[in-house]
Image 1 (tube, protein in one colour):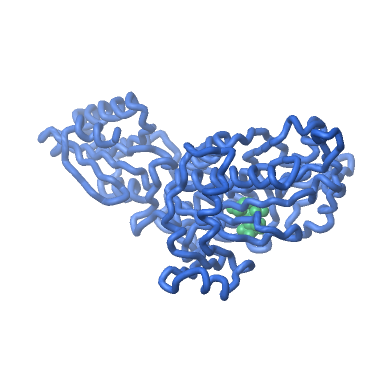
Image 2: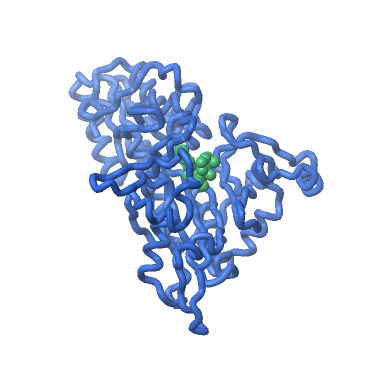
Length: 438
Ligand code: ATP
Ligand code: MG
């Protein structure tokens, strides 16, 4: 992609209402444009990252056995009247009428819709376990939209819904999502800690929020320091028996403010390991039993032929919020530092003298070689001055910067910089390509 033909509207300074660094950087690097409070347009660079984040979430859901569908953004109010939530949900729900005066709403979540789909088709326990997910825009008319995509009104969520015959198998479904979440966030370079969360009226221990520690986070959290550094289990696990992996994590103390019990924290965690911090909630998993299947009559015939209400759980990931969380966790004074897995481009090739034919030819050769190696390349072929080019490259946080100028060309070298460490080397092009290829 040639920068001279691209659409990358960067800003020198962030608008003063952007309070936290991720919001400032998302605006400055030209990732998003605010259209209304909590409502954003995704610009090309932001959209690229959003798609990468979404794809990691999708791959890990699929690996855990969940099946992708796509539910509508607009939902019928009648379904929510069936579950009893239409009146309860309150002002966060955006309510709409169509031309026939029918009540619709912009979905803030999709338990009702997915339960309606399930009950229409699934009649026997033989179809279970089943986990259906979608990655779809949600709308919540938040009281205080703020911090950019962190607390938007319109935001992209991955929401999965599991269906099981009884609580024991629902727990297995829950464990699969628990492990899938650990792997998902780790692939994005994040340390997400599962913390005991409010289980709501059902009670029990099957509710966890996945939290990224960050000073700007909206949640107050308490946990054992060792949990933060624990590595994700990876995909090569026994997906039918994950209890050991889950127990290993949940045996250590980690709780959000609503669930915090100071005495329990102190008795279970040596003083030196006690961590009190702020955090960003990037995911929430939840078992709710028959909360929706009972009022909405979602039943299947069990092995004994008797109709049974299914046991459900729901599992959310804040896909668009994750961009903010990743930037909060990975930036410096110069700008964003994208982890390789979610970077909008793998490498930016910087032409230091775009008017010089020999330099441009060398740059184009480098771009072609990188593209042939399967890399996504942004080619800065503009005639901006070098300082501005380096500043832009740092701001947008592409993992590798490959710079070619007349002097290096004469010496047969290019300059390669790793954004994350700032390390620079002057090497022949072939060696630079090798380093980038990893
Ligand atoms: P919060 O406590 O932050 O409002 P929630 O409990 O309402 O979150 P869920 O209903 O569990 O969130 O939604 C699943 C995920 O969607 C959350 O873990 C979060 O990452 C994301 N999410 C929720 N609300 C927003 C929002 N307003 N903007 C961006 N992402 C959100
Ligand atoms: Mg909320």
